[in-house]
Image 1: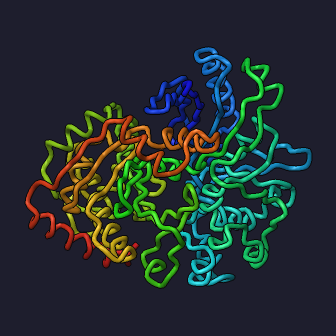
Image 2 (image 1 turned 90 degrees about the vertical axis):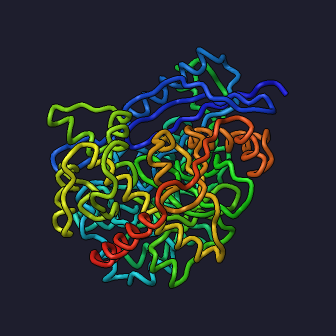
Image 3 (image 1 turned 45 degrees about the vertical axis):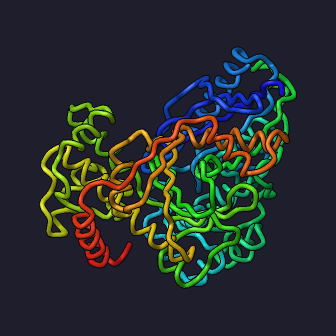
Length: 497
Protein backbone atom coordinates (compact mmCIF):
# COMPACT_ATOMS: atom_id res chain seq x y z
CA UNK A 1 0.00 0.00 0.00
CA UNK A 2 1.09 3.59 -0.52
CA UNK A 3 2.44 5.11 2.66
CA UNK A 4 -0.28 6.79 4.68
CA UNK A 5 0.31 9.82 6.90
CA UNK A 6 -1.74 10.79 9.95
CA UNK A 7 -1.16 13.91 12.06
CA UNK A 8 -1.53 13.33 15.80
CA UNK A 9 -1.61 16.10 18.37
CA UNK A 10 -0.95 14.84 21.88
CA UNK A 11 -1.42 17.39 24.65
CA UNK A 12 -0.30 16.66 28.19
CA UNK A 13 -0.26 18.69 31.38
CA UNK A 14 3.38 19.74 30.88
CA UNK A 15 3.78 19.82 27.10
CA UNK A 16 2.19 19.12 23.76
CA UNK A 17 3.52 17.85 20.47
CA UNK A 18 2.52 17.18 16.94
CA UNK A 19 3.70 13.98 15.30
CA UNK A 20 3.09 12.46 11.90
CA UNK A 21 2.55 8.70 11.87
CA UNK A 22 3.75 7.06 8.67
CA UNK A 23 2.25 3.63 7.91
CA UNK A 24 3.47 1.54 4.98
CA UNK A 25 1.18 -1.42 5.61
CA UNK A 26 3.78 -3.32 7.63
CA UNK A 27 5.29 -0.90 10.11
CA UNK A 28 4.52 2.41 11.72
CA UNK A 29 7.00 5.16 12.48
CA UNK A 30 6.63 8.63 13.98
CA UNK A 31 8.17 11.94 12.97
CA UNK A 32 7.85 14.92 15.31
CA UNK A 33 6.83 18.18 13.65
CA UNK A 34 6.54 20.47 16.66
CA UNK A 35 6.70 20.48 20.44
CA UNK A 36 5.54 23.16 22.84
CA UNK A 37 5.16 23.78 26.54
CA UNK A 38 1.90 23.61 28.44
CA UNK A 39 0.94 24.36 32.00
CA UNK A 40 -1.37 26.29 34.22
CA UNK A 41 -1.79 30.05 34.13
CA UNK A 42 -2.87 31.68 37.38
CA UNK A 43 -5.15 34.67 36.98
CA UNK A 44 -6.06 36.22 40.32
CA UNK A 45 -7.15 33.19 42.40
CA UNK A 46 -7.93 30.77 39.56
CA UNK A 47 -5.81 28.32 37.56
CA UNK A 48 -6.55 28.23 33.83
CA UNK A 49 -5.35 26.59 30.63
CA UNK A 50 -4.27 28.97 27.87
CA UNK A 51 -6.38 27.28 25.22
CA UNK A 52 -5.91 29.96 22.58
CA UNK A 53 -2.14 29.60 22.71
CA UNK A 54 -2.53 25.83 22.53
CA UNK A 55 -4.72 26.17 19.44
CA UNK A 56 -2.17 28.46 17.81
CA UNK A 57 0.53 25.83 18.48
CA UNK A 58 -1.68 23.18 16.85
CA UNK A 59 -2.20 25.35 13.80
CA UNK A 60 1.57 25.90 13.61
CA UNK A 61 2.10 22.14 13.84
CA UNK A 62 -0.43 21.54 11.06
CA UNK A 63 1.34 24.03 8.79
CA UNK A 64 4.71 22.42 9.53
CA UNK A 65 3.33 18.94 8.84
CA UNK A 66 1.98 20.13 5.48
CA UNK A 67 5.31 21.82 4.66
CA UNK A 68 7.24 18.61 5.41
CA UNK A 69 4.84 15.94 4.15
CA UNK A 70 2.80 17.78 1.54
CA UNK A 71 -0.96 18.00 1.24
CA UNK A 72 -1.62 14.26 1.26
CA UNK A 73 -2.16 13.84 5.00
CA UNK A 74 -4.93 11.33 5.59
CA UNK A 75 -6.33 12.87 8.77
CA UNK A 76 -5.75 14.81 11.96
CA UNK A 77 -6.56 13.72 15.53
CA UNK A 78 -6.25 15.31 18.97
CA UNK A 79 -5.95 13.77 22.42
CA UNK A 80 -5.59 15.52 25.79
CA UNK A 81 -5.92 14.88 29.51
CA UNK A 82 -9.43 14.26 30.82
CA UNK A 83 -12.08 16.10 32.89
CA UNK A 84 -11.40 19.71 31.82
CA UNK A 85 -13.70 21.60 29.47
CA UNK A 86 -14.51 24.90 27.82
CA UNK A 87 -17.87 26.66 27.75
CA UNK A 88 -19.27 28.48 24.74
CA UNK A 89 -21.95 31.12 24.94
CA UNK A 90 -24.42 32.58 22.49
CA UNK A 91 -22.81 32.93 19.06
CA UNK A 92 -20.23 30.28 20.07
CA UNK A 93 -18.20 32.82 22.02
CA UNK A 94 -15.64 31.20 24.32
CA UNK A 95 -16.61 32.06 27.90
CA UNK A 96 -13.15 32.52 29.39
CA UNK A 97 -10.19 30.21 29.42
CA UNK A 98 -10.95 26.68 30.69
CA UNK A 99 -10.18 26.07 34.35
CA UNK A 100 -7.33 23.76 35.35
CA UNK A 101 -8.33 20.61 37.24
CA UNK A 102 -5.91 21.43 40.07
CA UNK A 103 -7.71 24.69 40.84
CA UNK A 104 -8.53 24.92 44.54
CA UNK A 105 -12.13 25.97 43.85
CA UNK A 106 -12.85 22.24 43.69
CA UNK A 107 -11.72 21.66 47.29
CA UNK A 108 -14.44 20.11 49.44
CA UNK A 109 -16.97 19.90 46.61
CA UNK A 110 -17.40 16.11 46.73
CA UNK A 111 -18.79 16.25 50.27
CA UNK A 112 -21.30 18.86 49.08
CA UNK A 113 -22.28 16.62 46.15
CA UNK A 114 -22.86 13.58 48.34
CA UNK A 115 -25.50 15.51 50.28
CA UNK A 116 -27.62 15.47 47.12
CA UNK A 117 -26.66 12.11 45.62
CA UNK A 118 -25.00 9.70 48.08
CA UNK A 119 -21.54 8.42 47.17
CA UNK A 120 -22.69 4.83 46.69
CA UNK A 121 -25.52 5.79 44.35
CA UNK A 122 -23.27 8.09 42.34
CA UNK A 123 -20.74 5.30 41.79
CA UNK A 124 -23.50 2.85 40.90
CA UNK A 125 -24.77 5.25 38.23
CA UNK A 126 -21.42 6.24 36.73
CA UNK A 127 -18.75 3.70 37.78
CA UNK A 128 -16.19 6.50 37.95
CA UNK A 129 -13.41 6.97 40.51
CA UNK A 130 -14.08 9.85 42.89
CA UNK A 131 -11.70 12.73 42.35
CA UNK A 132 -12.62 16.28 43.22
CA UNK A 133 -11.72 17.55 39.76
CA UNK A 134 -14.04 15.28 37.76
CA UNK A 135 -16.12 17.40 35.38
CA UNK A 136 -19.29 16.86 37.41
CA UNK A 137 -17.64 18.26 40.52
CA UNK A 138 -16.09 21.16 38.60
CA UNK A 139 -19.58 22.14 37.40
CA UNK A 140 -20.87 21.91 40.95
CA UNK A 141 -17.98 24.13 42.07
CA UNK A 142 -19.05 26.72 39.48
CA UNK A 143 -22.60 26.48 40.80
CA UNK A 144 -21.37 26.90 44.38
CA UNK A 145 -19.47 30.04 43.30
CA UNK A 146 -22.63 31.32 41.54
CA UNK A 147 -20.53 31.66 38.41
CA UNK A 148 -22.27 33.46 35.53
CA UNK A 149 -20.61 30.98 33.16
CA UNK A 150 -23.20 28.29 33.82
CA UNK A 151 -26.23 30.46 33.13
CA UNK A 152 -24.67 31.84 29.94
CA UNK A 153 -23.25 28.60 28.52
CA UNK A 154 -24.87 27.10 25.43
CA UNK A 155 -22.25 24.40 24.76
CA UNK A 156 -19.85 22.40 26.92
CA UNK A 157 -16.91 20.86 25.07
CA UNK A 158 -14.16 18.75 26.59
CA UNK A 159 -10.67 20.05 25.84
CA UNK A 160 -9.97 17.97 22.71
CA UNK A 161 -13.51 18.55 21.46
CA UNK A 162 -13.11 22.29 21.97
CA UNK A 163 -9.98 22.20 19.83
CA UNK A 164 -11.80 20.06 17.24
CA UNK A 165 -14.53 22.71 17.17
CA UNK A 166 -11.94 25.42 16.53
CA UNK A 167 -10.62 23.35 13.60
CA UNK A 168 -13.93 22.22 12.09
CA UNK A 169 -16.82 24.22 13.51
CA UNK A 170 -18.45 20.91 14.52
CA UNK A 171 -19.54 20.25 18.11
CA UNK A 172 -19.33 16.64 19.27
CA UNK A 173 -17.97 14.69 22.24
CA UNK A 174 -15.92 11.52 21.76
CA UNK A 175 -16.88 8.72 24.14
CA UNK A 176 -13.57 8.07 25.93
CA UNK A 177 -13.20 11.72 26.92
CA UNK A 178 -16.89 11.94 27.85
CA UNK A 179 -16.46 8.98 30.19
CA UNK A 180 -14.05 10.97 32.38
CA UNK A 181 -16.77 13.46 33.33
CA UNK A 182 -18.70 11.26 35.80
CA UNK A 183 -21.82 12.29 33.89
CA UNK A 184 -22.22 9.20 31.66
CA UNK A 185 -24.40 6.12 32.00
CA UNK A 186 -21.70 3.50 31.26
CA UNK A 187 -24.23 0.91 30.11
CA UNK A 188 -26.15 3.14 27.72
CA UNK A 189 -22.96 5.09 26.82
CA UNK A 190 -24.94 8.34 26.89
CA UNK A 191 -25.19 11.44 29.08
CA UNK A 192 -27.05 10.88 32.36
CA UNK A 193 -29.21 13.99 32.12
CA UNK A 194 -31.42 12.88 35.02
CA UNK A 195 -28.34 12.84 37.26
CA UNK A 196 -27.47 16.39 36.24
CA UNK A 197 -31.04 17.44 36.96
CA UNK A 198 -30.77 16.00 40.47
CA UNK A 199 -27.79 18.26 41.05
CA UNK A 200 -29.57 21.28 39.59
CA UNK A 201 -27.11 21.41 36.70
CA UNK A 202 -28.07 22.13 33.08
CA UNK A 203 -27.78 19.49 30.38
CA UNK A 204 -28.84 21.53 27.35
CA UNK A 205 -25.21 22.42 26.66
CA UNK A 206 -24.05 18.82 26.19
CA UNK A 207 -23.18 17.76 22.64
CA UNK A 208 -23.81 14.42 20.88
CA UNK A 209 -21.47 11.56 21.81
CA UNK A 210 -19.57 9.90 18.95
CA UNK A 211 -17.58 6.67 18.89
CA UNK A 212 -13.81 6.46 18.98
CA UNK A 213 -12.55 6.54 15.40
CA UNK A 214 -15.47 8.61 14.12
CA UNK A 215 -14.93 11.42 11.65
CA UNK A 216 -15.71 14.76 13.31
CA UNK A 217 -15.60 16.81 10.12
CA UNK A 218 -13.16 18.55 7.81
CA UNK A 219 -11.03 21.63 8.35
CA UNK A 220 -12.72 25.01 8.20
CA UNK A 221 -11.87 26.82 4.97
CA UNK A 222 -9.91 29.56 6.77
CA UNK A 223 -7.82 26.99 8.67
CA UNK A 224 -7.15 24.98 5.51
CA UNK A 225 -6.07 28.09 3.61
CA UNK A 226 -3.79 29.18 6.44
CA UNK A 227 -2.12 25.75 6.64
CA UNK A 228 -1.92 25.20 2.90
CA UNK A 229 -4.21 22.17 2.70
CA UNK A 230 -7.88 21.52 2.17
CA UNK A 231 -10.39 18.75 2.75
CA UNK A 232 -8.37 17.24 5.63
CA UNK A 233 -10.49 14.98 7.84
CA UNK A 234 -10.48 15.46 11.59
CA UNK A 235 -10.96 12.08 13.27
CA UNK A 236 -11.64 11.42 16.94
CA UNK A 237 -9.02 9.01 18.28
CA UNK A 238 -9.48 7.93 21.87
CA UNK A 239 -9.42 11.60 22.81
CA UNK A 240 -8.58 10.88 26.43
CA UNK A 241 -4.82 10.45 26.31
CA UNK A 242 -4.95 7.33 28.48
CA UNK A 243 -7.44 5.77 26.09
CA UNK A 244 -5.05 6.38 23.20
CA UNK A 245 -2.10 5.06 25.19
CA UNK A 246 -3.91 1.79 25.95
CA UNK A 247 -4.59 1.26 22.24
CA UNK A 248 -0.79 1.08 21.86
CA UNK A 249 -0.24 -1.52 24.62
CA UNK A 250 1.61 -4.34 22.79
CA UNK A 251 -0.26 -7.11 24.61
CA UNK A 252 -0.65 -10.57 23.10
CA UNK A 253 -3.38 -11.82 25.49
CA UNK A 254 -6.17 -10.34 27.59
CA UNK A 255 -4.51 -11.32 30.87
CA UNK A 256 -2.32 -8.31 31.47
CA UNK A 257 -2.31 -5.10 33.45
CA UNK A 258 -1.21 -1.77 32.04
CA UNK A 259 0.29 1.39 33.46
CA UNK A 260 0.12 4.50 31.33
CA UNK A 261 2.95 6.28 33.04
CA UNK A 262 3.54 10.02 32.96
CA UNK A 263 2.38 12.90 35.13
CA UNK A 264 -0.29 10.43 36.27
CA UNK A 265 0.03 6.67 36.48
CA UNK A 266 -3.16 5.10 35.15
CA UNK A 267 -3.10 1.42 36.10
CA UNK A 268 -5.70 -1.17 35.28
CA UNK A 269 -7.07 -3.85 33.00
CA UNK A 270 -9.20 -3.93 29.87
CA UNK A 271 -12.72 -5.39 30.11
CA UNK A 272 -15.69 -5.81 27.82
CA UNK A 273 -18.29 -4.52 30.30
CA UNK A 274 -18.26 -2.02 33.20
CA UNK A 275 -17.40 -3.54 36.57
CA UNK A 276 -19.62 -1.70 39.04
CA UNK A 277 -19.88 -3.47 42.39
CA UNK A 278 -19.27 -3.02 46.10
CA UNK A 279 -15.69 -4.23 45.56
CA UNK A 280 -14.87 -1.77 42.77
CA UNK A 281 -16.56 1.02 44.73
CA UNK A 282 -14.47 0.21 47.81
CA UNK A 283 -11.28 0.29 45.72
CA UNK A 284 -12.42 3.60 44.17
CA UNK A 285 -11.52 2.51 40.65
CA UNK A 286 -12.93 3.88 37.45
CA UNK A 287 -14.73 2.46 34.40
CA UNK A 288 -13.71 4.65 31.48
CA UNK A 289 -14.43 4.25 27.81
CA UNK A 290 -11.83 2.54 25.65
CA UNK A 291 -11.38 1.94 21.96
CA UNK A 292 -13.50 -0.52 19.99
CA UNK A 293 -16.14 -0.83 22.72
CA UNK A 294 -13.76 -1.78 25.52
CA UNK A 295 -13.82 -0.49 29.10
CA UNK A 296 -10.70 0.66 30.93
CA UNK A 297 -11.07 -0.50 34.52
CA UNK A 298 -8.32 1.46 36.20
CA UNK A 299 -7.04 3.47 39.13
CA UNK A 300 -5.68 7.00 38.79
CA UNK A 301 -2.41 7.24 40.74
CA UNK A 302 -0.54 10.50 41.32
CA UNK A 303 2.40 9.32 39.17
CA UNK A 304 5.56 11.19 38.21
CA UNK A 305 3.87 14.44 39.21
CA UNK A 306 5.60 13.79 42.54
CA UNK A 307 9.04 13.98 40.93
CA UNK A 308 8.08 16.76 38.52
CA UNK A 309 6.98 18.98 41.38
CA UNK A 310 10.06 18.13 43.46
CA UNK A 311 12.16 19.22 40.48
CA UNK A 312 10.27 22.53 40.33
CA UNK A 313 10.76 22.99 44.08
CA UNK A 314 14.52 22.56 43.76
CA UNK A 315 14.60 24.86 40.72
CA UNK A 316 12.95 27.60 42.77
CA UNK A 317 15.78 27.15 45.26
CA UNK A 318 18.33 27.65 42.52
CA UNK A 319 19.17 23.98 41.98
CA UNK A 320 18.41 22.80 38.45
CA UNK A 321 18.34 19.04 37.83
CA UNK A 322 17.47 17.08 34.72
CA UNK A 323 15.19 14.09 35.13
CA UNK A 324 18.13 11.85 34.25
CA UNK A 325 20.18 13.41 37.05
CA UNK A 326 17.35 12.96 39.55
CA UNK A 327 16.90 9.31 38.58
CA UNK A 328 20.66 8.69 38.82
CA UNK A 329 20.79 10.18 42.32
CA UNK A 330 17.76 8.13 43.34
CA UNK A 331 19.48 4.99 42.10
CA UNK A 332 22.46 5.70 44.34
CA UNK A 333 20.38 6.58 47.41
CA UNK A 334 19.58 4.18 50.22
CA UNK A 335 16.51 2.05 49.68
CA UNK A 336 13.38 2.25 51.83
CA UNK A 337 14.26 5.29 53.90
CA UNK A 338 10.54 6.16 54.10
CA UNK A 339 7.19 5.49 52.43
CA UNK A 340 4.54 7.96 51.30
CA UNK A 341 1.01 7.44 49.99
CA UNK A 342 1.25 8.93 46.47
CA UNK A 343 -2.43 9.89 46.43
CA UNK A 344 -2.49 11.68 49.77
CA UNK A 345 -4.29 15.04 49.46
CA UNK A 346 -1.24 17.24 50.27
CA UNK A 347 0.44 16.02 47.06
CA UNK A 348 -2.39 17.03 44.71
CA UNK A 349 -1.53 20.72 44.34
CA UNK A 350 1.31 21.61 46.74
CA UNK A 351 3.15 24.88 47.04
CA UNK A 352 6.41 23.00 47.62
CA UNK A 353 6.45 19.24 46.96
CA UNK A 354 9.81 18.62 48.64
CA UNK A 355 8.54 20.17 51.86
CA UNK A 356 5.26 18.24 51.60
CA UNK A 357 7.10 14.92 51.23
CA UNK A 358 9.24 15.70 54.28
CA UNK A 359 6.22 16.86 56.30
CA UNK A 360 4.26 13.73 55.39
CA UNK A 361 7.10 11.47 56.54
CA UNK A 362 7.47 13.27 59.86
CA UNK A 363 3.72 13.34 60.52
CA UNK A 364 3.52 9.57 59.91
CA UNK A 365 6.37 8.80 62.32
CA UNK A 366 9.16 8.39 59.77
CA UNK A 367 12.41 10.17 59.12
CA UNK A 368 12.23 12.75 56.38
CA UNK A 369 14.50 12.11 53.37
CA UNK A 370 17.63 14.23 53.66
CA UNK A 371 19.04 14.33 50.14
CA UNK A 372 17.75 14.92 46.64
CA UNK A 373 18.31 11.27 45.75
CA UNK A 374 16.52 10.01 48.87
CA UNK A 375 13.51 12.22 48.19
CA UNK A 376 13.13 10.99 44.62
CA UNK A 377 13.68 7.38 45.65
CA UNK A 378 10.97 7.66 48.32
CA UNK A 379 8.59 8.87 45.60
CA UNK A 380 9.50 6.09 43.15
CA UNK A 381 9.49 3.26 45.69
CA UNK A 382 6.14 4.44 47.02
CA UNK A 383 4.72 4.48 43.50
CA UNK A 384 5.92 0.91 42.99
CA UNK A 385 4.23 -0.18 46.22
CA UNK A 386 1.02 1.52 45.13
CA UNK A 387 1.26 -0.36 41.83
CA UNK A 388 1.30 -3.64 43.77
CA UNK A 389 -1.79 -2.62 45.74
CA UNK A 390 -3.69 -1.75 42.54
CA UNK A 391 -2.46 -4.93 40.83
CA UNK A 392 -3.93 -7.04 43.63
CA UNK A 393 -7.27 -5.28 43.28
CA UNK A 394 -7.26 -5.87 39.52
CA UNK A 395 -6.50 -9.55 40.04
CA UNK A 396 -9.53 -9.75 42.33
CA UNK A 397 -11.72 -8.14 39.67
CA UNK A 398 -10.25 -10.31 36.89
CA UNK A 399 -10.53 -13.47 39.00
CA UNK A 400 -7.03 -14.70 38.15
CA UNK A 401 -3.37 -13.88 38.61
CA UNK A 402 -1.92 -11.35 36.19
CA UNK A 403 1.59 -12.29 35.08
CA UNK A 404 2.61 -9.32 32.93
CA UNK A 405 2.45 -5.57 33.46
CA UNK A 406 2.82 -3.36 30.38
CA UNK A 407 4.15 0.13 31.11
CA UNK A 408 3.68 2.60 28.28
CA UNK A 409 4.30 6.32 27.86
CA UNK A 410 7.02 8.74 28.85
CA UNK A 411 7.54 7.08 32.22
CA UNK A 412 9.12 4.11 30.45
CA UNK A 413 12.24 6.24 30.14
CA UNK A 414 12.60 6.08 33.92
CA UNK A 415 14.33 2.71 34.03
CA UNK A 416 14.60 2.81 37.81
CA UNK A 417 10.82 3.11 38.22
CA UNK A 418 10.25 0.26 35.74
CA UNK A 419 12.63 -1.99 37.68
CA UNK A 420 11.11 -1.00 41.02
CA UNK A 421 7.67 -1.85 39.62
CA UNK A 422 8.90 -5.33 38.69
CA UNK A 423 10.56 -5.75 42.10
CA UNK A 424 7.56 -4.57 44.13
CA UNK A 425 4.96 -6.61 42.22
CA UNK A 426 7.21 -9.65 41.53
CA UNK A 427 5.88 -9.60 37.98
CA UNK A 428 7.46 -9.24 34.56
CA UNK A 429 7.27 -5.67 33.35
CA UNK A 430 7.37 -4.90 29.62
CA UNK A 431 8.11 -1.23 28.99
CA UNK A 432 7.30 0.57 25.77
CA UNK A 433 6.48 2.16 23.51
CA UNK A 434 7.50 5.56 24.84
CA UNK A 435 5.21 7.56 22.56
CA UNK A 436 2.24 5.29 23.30
CA UNK A 437 -0.36 8.06 23.37
CA UNK A 438 0.62 9.50 20.00
CA UNK A 439 0.89 5.99 18.55
CA UNK A 440 -2.58 5.08 19.81
CA UNK A 441 -3.90 8.35 18.40
CA UNK A 442 -2.44 7.49 14.99
CA UNK A 443 -3.71 3.91 15.13
CA UNK A 444 -7.29 5.01 15.78
CA UNK A 445 -7.06 7.49 12.91
CA UNK A 446 -5.93 4.60 10.73
CA UNK A 447 -8.87 2.58 12.06
CA UNK A 448 -11.23 5.45 11.26
CA UNK A 449 -9.81 5.68 7.74
CA UNK A 450 -10.26 1.92 7.21
CA UNK A 451 -6.52 1.22 7.00
CA UNK A 452 -6.54 -0.98 10.15
CA UNK A 453 -9.35 -3.40 10.88
CA UNK A 454 -9.15 -4.23 14.58
CA UNK A 455 -7.58 -3.47 17.94
CA UNK A 456 -5.64 -6.74 17.73
CA UNK A 457 -4.18 -5.72 14.37
CA UNK A 458 -3.19 -2.35 15.83
CA UNK A 459 -1.33 -3.99 18.72
CA UNK A 460 0.45 -6.43 16.43
CA UNK A 461 1.63 -3.43 14.44
CA UNK A 462 3.01 -1.86 17.64
CA UNK A 463 4.98 -5.03 18.42
CA UNK A 464 6.50 -5.00 14.94
CA UNK A 465 7.33 -1.33 14.92
CA UNK A 466 8.68 -0.23 18.32
CA UNK A 467 11.35 -1.26 20.81
CA UNK A 468 10.23 -2.91 24.04
CA UNK A 469 12.30 -3.54 27.19
CA UNK A 470 11.60 -6.39 29.62
CA UNK A 471 12.28 -6.10 33.36
CA UNK A 472 12.22 -9.12 35.65
CA UNK A 473 11.96 -9.00 39.46
CA UNK A 474 15.26 -8.49 41.27
CA UNK A 475 16.33 -7.75 44.83
CA UNK A 476 15.22 -9.29 48.07
CA UNK A 477 11.59 -10.39 47.79
CA UNK A 478 11.31 -10.63 51.57
CA UNK A 479 12.45 -7.05 52.02
CA UNK A 480 9.88 -5.83 49.51
CA UNK A 481 7.22 -7.85 51.31
CA UNK A 482 8.13 -6.15 54.58
CA UNK A 483 7.87 -2.73 52.92
CA UNK A 484 4.50 -3.62 51.44
CA UNK A 485 3.20 -4.54 54.88
CA UNK A 486 4.39 -1.13 56.09
CA UNK A 487 2.64 0.50 53.15
CA UNK A 488 -0.63 -1.27 53.97
CA UNK A 489 -0.31 -0.09 57.57
CA UNK A 490 0.26 3.47 56.32
CA UNK A 491 -2.86 3.27 54.14
CA UNK A 492 -4.88 2.13 57.13
CA UNK A 493 -3.46 4.96 59.19
CA UNK A 494 -4.58 7.44 56.52
CA UNK A 495 -8.05 5.93 56.13
CA UNK A 496 -7.25 3.96 52.94
CA UNK A 497 -7.15 6.77 50.37
